[in-house]
Length: 567
Image (cartoon, rainbow, N blue to C red; front, side, top):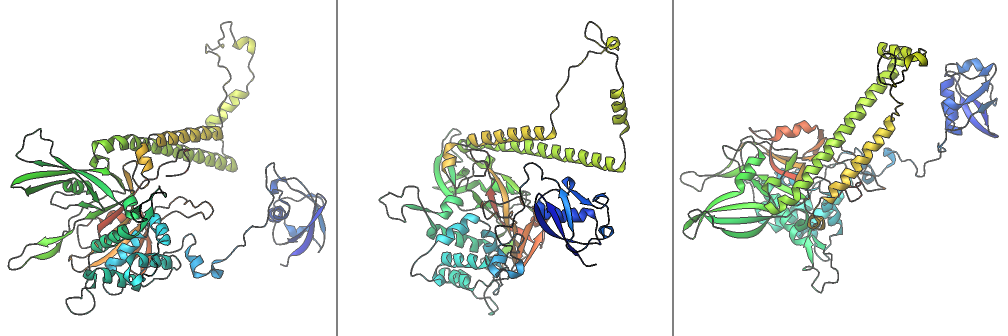
């Protein structure tokens, strides 16, 4: 049925509205709301015979083109006028490929397998989840050096191209740079066809080493007289490098010997896998103690972490050499199942000094989380109760207990008979004074204020030297962000993929990300798919299926001094 152009008169103004006779008054009021900003429940539209009702069929109005209707009503207090969007709405079909790739829900670009290069693709996709790395790569530039001889420049360009498309991309330039820097990755396959399969962990380590040497950050003292390179630390130094304190003692020495103490840095932690290793914690503990022979004696080296980086790399040592008679041995894969957590607590592996700084923060984090969970549970309970009450009211259902209570409240009470001189009622109960109950909104506001204060207190517990160390972990807690996996029984073949946790939607105005949905991206060369968090638990090994080889953890975010944003 064709629409009829009519006019709404409101507060001296006329508004053109298309009336659809096939709809009802409720729909028409919504149309009027869009041009007057007066909510439908506050509108009084005068028609022949009275006011327009929500369920009235508009065909009964017998409206004529140009007919005028008077509307009485004002917007609610505080309501803002409807206005045209400040920015023009742009549909996906009208966007460029780069613009579409930046939209919420866009599938990230995959990487083409250029012949046994799945080991490289999985490492590149996992490293790309580090936002600080991409920010620093944009600033990187070495005049006069071609990308074909510089993996850092090639990585910068590769990530830039990947951010501008949802199609799979062939990393030719980066692969050429990698093979030019390290001939290991240029080895040919034993059958003479193409290039050999390589270890993803070795590719990862090479990339990190190059970034450590070339991707430099400006130090806080720009007035230093030292050269620019000596006056800078690298991205890897700040965000991905840890430090250990190692104590070496002779096994045959006195029980009270102090031993020799040294400091070492690490770019990754190894998880050794033995017959008794069932969990990541077991492997890390085993790697922290080593028995060695030197200077004609037996010694024990015990290491504890004295600096935890913001991004922690963990390597499952699944590949090793097995001795074989007549040659140097063969490279084998350890198939044992070793589980790992989504949240990793590294406090127990730290030195006493660092542990003393981390424990108060870690414990307060858990306390704040419990408060947040309690508030969320209370909110859900309140919503469930309100929804039930609304549904019961709509269905005409009355709670018998509430109804009887309401009826008893309505019964008149003879004050002379009900009170005695001692302030008690006739039935012997002590008379209660009026109690003022808080609304749900007031209770929620108090809880939110208490939570904000708890977050401020949490920030105050962070040691000043940890606050000054921008790229360090300040709580000892990590969240899992990426996993590189290997599928197959052989160390020299098989297939590598990677899993990367999805980030929350980015607000272009504030630069902050919203809440994450808990799902992960699975990068299988050029194929990219979304998987549930439960899938990550299946990557612990125990067979020829996908087993974790590299884990990338990130320090959990902590509140700033005002308790609002994250550090």
